[in-house]
Each structure stands twice: as structure tokens, then as C-alpha cells.
Image (tube, rainbow, N blue to C red; front, side, top):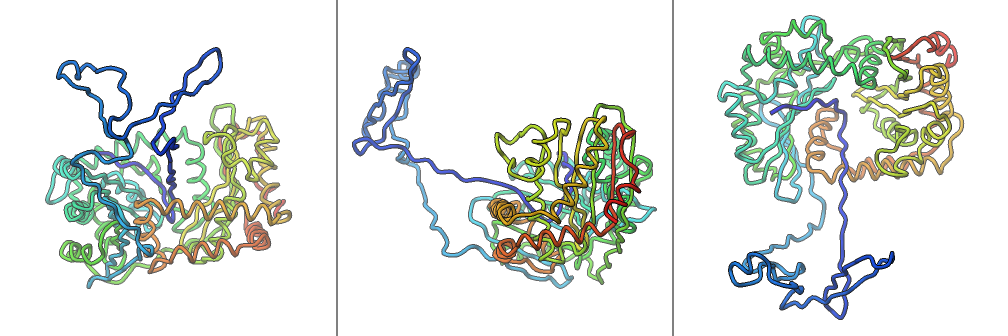
Length: 522
């Protein structure tokens, strides 16, 4: 069982629900069979008798063998004989998020979403910002060491027990938080919660497992060299910030071999305390979750919460040569305020959808996202531009907003000029129509994301770590609807007053000097 790597912010996912209705002919369902005759599409209709079902056109193999038709005679609109079909009433109001605090300061929060499945998560205020030079890379290793051997279970036993309840586990590290989640059925919530808490609170960190995961980390870090966007986002943080946010999330090659079980164990003992942890649940009754959790989480130590290390945005330049026909770059500025500035973070979210962008080929189908600025003003205008996408990384008290681009190396200087031009254009020329379109896209994305049970659980956990409570979704939607073009222009103008951060990789011979880029915005 291998945990996949994710870099996470306040939660988003997408799901869709579609409905289908069969046409009726003479009060009975109609089956339309299409065939091609003489190059024309013809339609034939055959009525389906509720008693006899569709015409079989003959007896199948099993019918010949056992003396009757092998086809089901019940129409698809009717339940099968002997099958009890229960209909769940639609609740009068949406489920509420409930929260309790245990004696050690650990918070338990949940929302009883309808359905047969549930998601549980343990979220910890512990990420790479809390590392220091002596334990750099620990958060990255913790992600790989999740759901391994504990003081009560071997790795094999843990895997087998997760399989036995039909569960799915995952862990992810980010700069400010660690997340451990398990998906399961509602009937096996107690078993899933016991496995989750044992894996997070009682890890054994055996030497052979740590060495095994370090070897995997080294291989994965090496493969990341082929992913310019991830490489550049790490580079942007390293030069943009002094302090916590400037520390690497992906462990550098030079420190991976120095990681040890003792180092990981000491980090966990210091940061995995009650006031820094949240148990979230979606699809589970709150009183039941609290009853299950209290004896399992009583061992978590209390104590005062560790303050978040300060981060100072300074901007800067990072460039690295890499062989290839393309030059990749990120131009970014600081969004001061972060998630704790709710109005500003909502405006920044709308700005991301306004810029949009993507690759020169729309992998999501014709027209997907092609109304955004970076599609209409960049990708549709410059044949040498292979990718142009808005990037945002928002944290509790700060954030980075910018553009990622990939272009033919001979046009590297033009690529940087276009990124600068598009950032400036938002602060100068913006219509209400564009903003309304971006607002609709942002609101629909938030609402569709929250149709996912897993996203609800994650949203609960991360919001409580950030705000101390979960804000109602109506508050976010109202804030999005209240955004005006003047708000977006003002936000971008404020960002452009901060020092730019420029990171490039590839053939960098034609990339302009940082001083020239910074002078353009000074």
C-alpha cells in the first residue's frame, strides 16, 4: 500500500450528477434500435411488455441447457423480485458541522452526510515550516512512513485489516499541515478509526522500513527532475521567502540520506499534540464519532500550542539550465494576508479563475476553460507558447500568485515579457463581464467540490486548524458573489508592488536578467 504524494491547500475536488429519462410510447418504455441502411440512420421501435419483457428473439445457450430463457424478464424500471428497494427521504436542510473538544485539546468535528460510506481524517498543524536544518525533510518522510508498522500491528497486518473492511488510506504532507485519511463504509467506522489512530499515534519507525522508504523518496525526487512545474514551485518558495515558508517541502537530495528513525520520532513527539490536531468525519453521526474517539485519542498529550514560525516575503531569482527545446518559468508576487484574510483570499480565488489558462491542447475536451484570459490572450495568440497557467499557493498568513509558462527556448525573453504583460493587464484593464464569468466558475467549482464526501472531511479538518471553526459554505458563496472588478484590479495592483519572484529552468540563455524584470514593476 503506497501513499501518493500530494501538496494540499484548503480543500477542492469535482463531481457531477446527471439524470436520464427513457421516452415513453403508448404508456410503455420504448427501446430504440438504430441501424445503418444505405448510408442513412434508421430507427426501429419495439414495445416492451411489462409482463413478458423485451422479445428475446430466441433462447440463449443456458436457456437451451436448462429449458428456459436465460434473459431477465423484468423491465429496468421495476425492482427485481425479492430485492428490497428502500427510498431515503431527502433531508429538509443540509447537514450541519458539529464540533467537540476533548480534555487534551484535540478537536473532533463531523458532518453526517447521507450515503453508505464515510471518510475520517486526522489533521495536524505540522509541516515543513516547523522543520529546522537538523531535521529538514522529516515531513516528506512522514508522508512515506504513514500507515506502516505500529507498536500494535505489523505493516502486513495493517494492510490486511484495511482490506478486510474495504477501506482506502492516504497521507499527504504540506507546508503547514499533515493529513491522514481513511475511506470506509459506515458500518466499519469503529474499525477504521481504530486503525487510523493507531497508525498516526503509535508508529514504530522501524529502521528497515525507514531505509526502504528513503530509497523510494530518492527515486521519486530524481523523477521530479522531469516535472518542471513542481521543480519551479519549490524553487519559487526557496527564493521568495525567508523563514518557514522558504523551507523545502520536497526533501533535497543532500539531506535524504541523513534522515533517521530517531529524527522522525522526535519531530512527531514534539508536534503531534492535542491542541494541534483535529479528527474530522463525513458520513458519521457526531455523538457516535466522539464516543469512538475519546478512548482512542486520550493518549494524545496536551500542552501549549507551538506558534507558527514567521515567514518574510522578499522575492528573488532562481534559474537552472536543463537540456531540451523548451524554457519553463514562473513569475509570481506575494498575496499578503493568506487564508486568515477571508475577503482577500476570495478575491484571489476569483483572480485564479479569471486568469485560468492551461496547455496548448485542451485535454479536458473542446472549449474547457478556453474563455479565460490566458487562453484568449496568450495561448490563442502565440504559437510558440506551449503552456500558460495561473498558479496560486495560499497559506495561513501569506501566499504566492503568479503565472507558469512553457515556451520554445528561442522565445524565452518573449515568454517572460508576456507573463509580465498579463499580470499588469489585470490591474489596468478588466471588465465586469470577465469577472462575472470567473465568479460563476469559482462558485460552481466550490459547490461541486463539496459534493464529495472526502472533500467535506478535508475541508472540515483544514478549516478548523486554520480558523478554529468551519465557516458555512453560504459565507464563501456570498463573498464570491460580492467581488467586483475594482476589487480584483486593486488586489493585483497591490501584489505588483511587492518584489517579483522569477524562477526559470531549461535553456535559460535568452531569459532576461532579474534586475530588468524587477525594474519594470518598480
